[in-house]
Image (cartoon, rainbow, N blue to C red):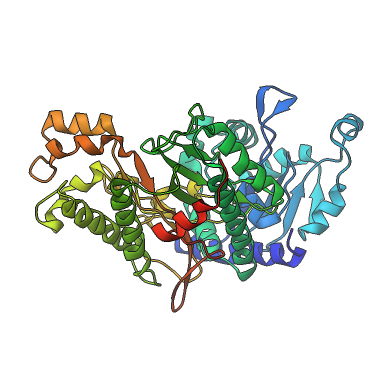
Length: 473
């Protein structure tokens, strides 16, 4: 945890930002309700998934223990933590932890009450000031608790979530404090170590599962956990491939999309695509270098005030130009981009914010987190762009362009004759085994531009092949 004053200051800033939002609506009072996460059973109550605290609760309180909640009075800032002392059984089975008074002191809460007192507090607040202010729930357990506490049907909770609170939370969390940047950089450096370790083992005959295990080992050795289930696969054209049944063969490309999470919950997220043989074939090199160029074109634009959508389009233009040079596409560049024909090869967005969530604040809704309430495209590919709004100094985000030869999608579009004026389907056959290529980096937006986070990690063809040259089979 950070020092108690950090969480106290964050809550004060949240109340100030929220008060401004509420005044616009003619409201001056309210009670914020922030539930922490409960344990989530895997297949029965005592066999749970790894506990991960809700990120909004973690941001405001720093406490990574289950079964807590807190309220914050918007007008006064007074904070009450709701938590229970360990039972004897819990002491035996889970071991000791800080008492509730010490937990409250660690986050500078003004008061601590047993969990059983929370429903009464919420009913009184609702009678006095209206429904307490809460964020959209994303876990079933949290939905059930909120429904019971607030007397709101679970199906209506998303509609009853407070838009002013959502906006205030985004305004705070999207600008990273220097201490947060240090945590993220620590996560990115552990992530780089994960990728280097996998590259060192990624030789013919290895299993995808063994390489996933190696990435996880390095994350654990770094003191934290993976920030999401690693994508470790020779089937890189499957964007979110979380199965590990395959084995590496000569001629394959291996795609690793993996990140580390620090003990305090901050994430790293990188993607590396490398040749199992240690050297890119001419075909692999051609596509890989287009992907690198697309990332460079996008990153070169990053600065405060730039709509991130423009960086996305810069990457898309570079990809189309590269594919045109290979004879796989043709036609006016701007026309191709506007039509969305490039999405056959680049069917996702350029990147996302990153912080306490690997896709930071995504549970608060892309409409506000990535678009500030502006309309989002429904076009295939572009609709998957998570971040489009103007950048601000202090944001942390990913740049992750890719090129994919997705056989099913190519066959579907070809059968439909979609964009046949731009895409040379008859020339794609030799490329269908090329698979998927993605390169991902993590960037901090600064007042004077952007800074690449993490230690040096040379992703050029020469840099990758040099790193792969010293491997043992």
